[in-house]
Amino acid sequence: MTRTVDTTQELAAFLRTRRERLDPHDVGLPPPRQSRRRRTPGLRREEVAELAGVSIDYVVRLEQGRGLRPSAEVLEALSRALRLAPDERAYLFDLARHRPRGAAEPASSIDPHMARLVADLSPLPAMLMNHRFDILAWNDEIARLLLDFDTLPPSQRNVMWLCLLHPGMREFYVDRERVVREGVAHLRAAWAAYPEDRELADRIAEFTARDEEFARYWGERDVKVNGRGHKVLRHPDAGEIAVRFEVLMPLQDRDQRLVIYRAADDESQSALDRLRLR
Image (cartoon, rainbow, N blue to C red; front, side):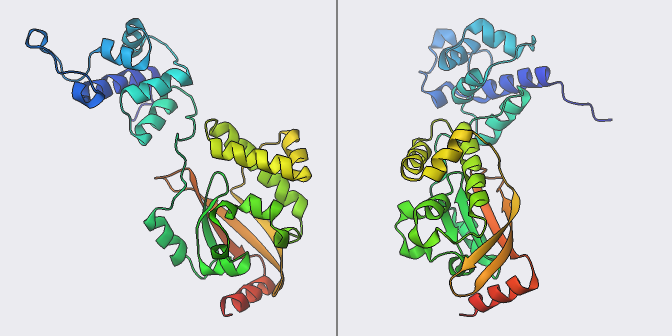
């Protein structure tokens, strides 16, 4: 029978193994002098403590599983000191019952494998975004449905920017108020998850300054992240199109969101088919 995880003991063991696998050279420490040869592999506890900015006694107690619950700040420092990979960092935060903060450098470019997946999803309209709503990749179907993103400068390839500030998109959504409200609530959740993301903060400042509707909803402090939903679009050529959307997050990069649209009814499917054949 598999036992449930004793998180305190697993946290202790995980920290020990990560410390023991590191070579001093990996973290920029000088090699030991002949008189101070290491009896055990990896870094010493005092070296980890110095790199993380905590006391040696604190590291000892953590590795002995003595009931400490480190803060998110301490976990972040330990992650850097121990050179943890992203998956290892997330595991450490899970063991300590903390939600890890967003990546220091959120995705702003597209992995070629994900770009190929977006293209392969045709004839379903699909695009790849990051947490800021920046559009990183798209297929022809969604460009025909929404907008030809190739005609836009990169700074405008952002779903919220288009909804709020692009003249041709102001009346694109039949239920515009709900769409904007949900977008604002998503951005507020992203803002908290990525507190050091200056580009996201700048986006929010721009929207607040330039759009009264956004500023009003932002002030209400609603938080919501939609994994699926329904929209009705006013397409200039095909008329009203009702779509359902799914938002999927790749395991290898949780900063990215794969958005897939599907027709909500037969009439909307016919409209999508006509757009695809144009």
